[in-house]
Length: 191
Ligand SMILES: [Zn+2]
Image 1 (tube, rainbow, N blue to C red):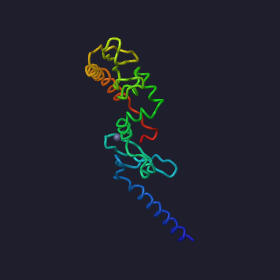
Image 2 (image 1 turned 120 degrees about the vertical axis):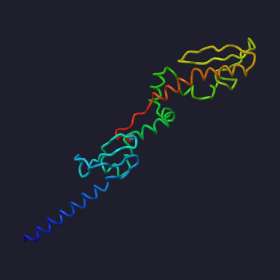
Image 3 (image 1 turned 135 degrees about the vertical axis):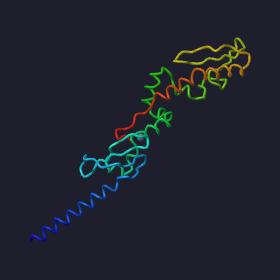
Image 4 (image 1 turned 180 degrees about the vertical axis):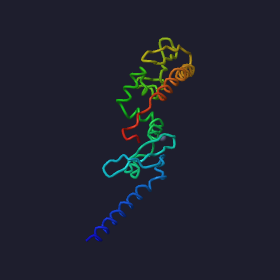
């Protein structure tokens, strides 16, 4: 009887040791941008939290399950990187976010980032139109929901040139500012 108990206990010990080794096999392994440094005492159900170092230098504690499944691949910087790369796209796709950004900058970014003229535009170029009364081409630009006159010109080309210069002067810095300030926050998993 005693021998059986010893044998069972030994077996359990071996199984536990094997499991421990299996878990500790994560140490030194790479998951995306993360390298596993050590196991922590923190647990969640049957899973362990591991201390990882991200390529960017940040440390992050991640549940082994999330590392193995490929769910967590960085300290969160990867998500930020992707978000800023696709910043324009995600702003376009996320209408609530877009409205909030437009409001903050008092600018319709959907309008200023497109070359497509509005339907009632006959010149084919945004902000340029022919005034038949004066027989001149007129240019204007909208900034912060205000319309600025850019003058009247004899030729359409001149008016287009003035309008394009104004876009560079007024829109480009505004778009750059918005893009650098608007970083989509990572989700709660810190992916
Ligand atoms: Zn990182």
